[in-house]
Every structure is written in C-alpha cells, then in structure tokens.
Length: 335
Ligand SMILES: [Zn+2]
Image (cartoon, rainbow, N blue to C red; front, side, top):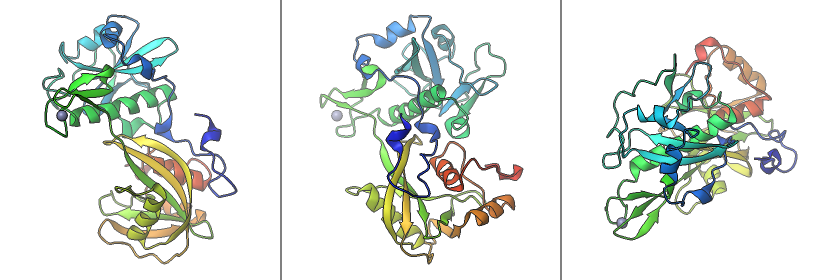
C-alpha cells in the first residue's frame, strides 16, 4: 500500500507519516479471481514449484534466522494431515504460488482432527513452530502478509464448520475462501470484527496509557474496544475512551489499520483529542490510566514501571510513532 493512502490530513503530532503497521504488510497478490478455478488447489499441490505454509494452533514453521519455512507439496504431505486435508489458496509472488495447509481443522475435512502436539518438521535443522503475535513484527513483508492471512483463515474454518442459520455441515469452496451450506444453498464468508484503538492526546500532546486487570504486570497500552452493532468507528472511539477512563474526546482522526486475527479483529487506529483530562477508570476492565509526556514515558520505561505491548501489535506501532521512533525496552521488559 502506498504510504500516501494512509497519511492523515493536516498538522498533528502523529502526522509525520503513518506508523509502520506490522501485520498490515503484504507482498503476495491474493489473486482472488483464481479461487473459483475448478481443481485449483489440487493442481497447485501437483506442481513441485508450489510452496506450502502449514499452520496448526496458530503456529507456522520458522527457520533459524526468522524466515518462515515454506514446504514443497511433497514435504507438506509428510506432516500427517491426510488425504482430505484442508488447503487454502493464499496467492502468488514473483511466479511462486502459495498454498496454506490447515493441520487442525476437522473432523470431516481432513486435518488431524483437533489440537495435539505439532508434527516434527521435515529435515530442516532448527526449524520451530511459532505464533504470529510473537514474531509478526520481525517478519519481512511477504512472510508477515501470508502468515496473517493464513492465521485468519484458520480461525474462521475452525468456527465455520456448521451453518449459523440451519446447523448443516458446510462444504469448502472457492479454494478455501468460502463455505457452502447445501441446505440453504448459500455461501458463507470469513468475517472480521472491527475494533478501535486510540492515541488519546491532551493539549500538551501527553499520551493516555492504560493498564487492564487482565494484562501482565505493568503492561500499559492504548485505550481500545470493539465496535458495537450499529455504531460508527468514531463513536466507538468516544464511547470506549469515556467508559474506560472518563476522558471526553473531541476530534478524531484516522491513522491506519491492521488485521489482528485472534480470532478475527480489524484494529482501526485513531488519534483522539481529549476535551477533559481528569481520569476516572471503570475499575472493572481498566485498573489504572495515566497521562505521559515523552519525558515521563522514557523514565517509566527505563525504570520498568511500564511495559509495552508486543512488536506485532498496532498499539506498539502507534506508541512508538508518538514517541518519535522505535523504543528500546530494558531486558526485564519481556512479555
Ligand atoms: Zn444453512
């Protein structure tokens, strides 16, 4: 995506170009028009040049050094998913076609029939199974895009085996991008839940960070929440900020978005201008909230009183953008 497409309007502290959003990156073309070709996946699995990305319980194989391990169709067949394994067409890049293999989606659609120990990886010294939240920020654009796409599809296929209207077992169609209900004669598609996350700024450009009861010790992040039925993104920004912190928000500006497929969020980031500064947390979800100047922030990070969200998150990208660049955490700031 061109940077210009995500640049917000006039002067603002978050307006020096968009933050690099780790899971919004992609290099492969999705080639959606090919998904309807009869026998597409079977033909690709018969071609030795196809590369297969396997996923199980949200984990994919990763090589030492941090690149994803793409298997040949022959290598992928040794992972024990069986003849009826669920494959999805992910797209192509520089002449190579990429197919996803879902190891744990079943029964009735191949796969291993549910979670269990992930299989050993064929003949690659040191390759390990790893999860998107842990490594997404360090991947290159091709790997980040394909992993994010595959993780989202894995979650959806696990949840969509039965039609939500009539309960009939659904059938995989469109190279894994839709499921067909034979009872209702309709296609079902992957769903995405919009959520907002906001850099709430006071008139001195201090940033509002919150700590939720559910998070690890000292973890601080931006205010965030799901969009409700019949609600705009901007209204969600104002409602969630008020509910969680008691702060009233005026102007709201879009920054950018990234998928967060755990299981199916689309995180939409905003800059939100505070009209009030007195904090009153809800005490249910949010334990505390504080305004941070950049100097306060540096000091709190250095003494360990705040710990930041992981590198793959949009929260981390927006916080670093407000701060003016990548932030180094002390060694004890591990997740
Ligand atoms: Zn149905």
